[in-house]
Image (cartoon, rainbow, N blue to C red; front, side, top):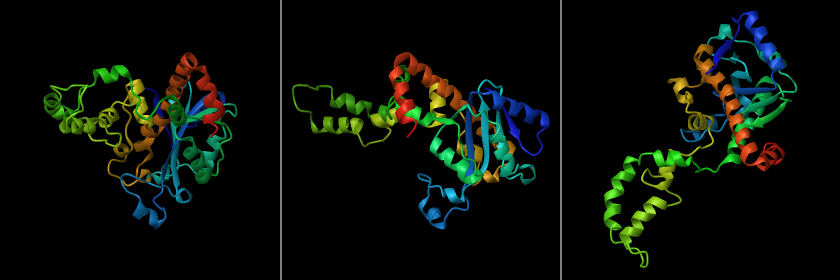
Length: 289
């Protein structure tokens, strides 16, 4: 794993100069931002819950952003609005760092539309570089319930499905494919193959633990065997990112900017090897949307 470096009011000019030199030379750069919308419209406080969250993007604050110049030993996180107020950089200083990015560089990010809107809305910085969305790459690469076949074979059956095993064995002991299933057989089969069920004893519930998925953290764990820190873990009980210091967020934020680069390399390598047409379709149709 690369080193994560916090850029704030205390950072030496030497580190800043190194970062700027890397940003000017890099042809691929991972980019990510952290935000909080505590000042959101009051109605959204009623609507939002643990399962859904609508951002009030005009009342959102960018607490910091991260950059990873491909090939560097470091990923950088810039503190703009974290709890350690005395260490923050100004929005103008943040824009000045972004302006050092090689204009020919391709920027990689997960959920590109959100990131691009946030930089323009929060920092008044319009991204002019070509942007590749690794989330869209994942959508182009695989379906919502696809998984690695070997992972499927190696996986242990979930306890809930094991609990149904005796019932299944007994119900299907005398199963005759030439005859209609009994009511108990139909019921057990339906519990397993139901398209709408996500219960732990269902196929969907089982695959949920194996599938590639589309989240950055899930993909990194599935494809590279690395478990990233989750949003809730980094918050550690705090309400939002703005209540954390730069030191508390640097590894989490910079990690997002780093991992989109190997994720992009993984998909690009696989597509060019197995299906070059998919790469062309992605670049001309999917990613521009």
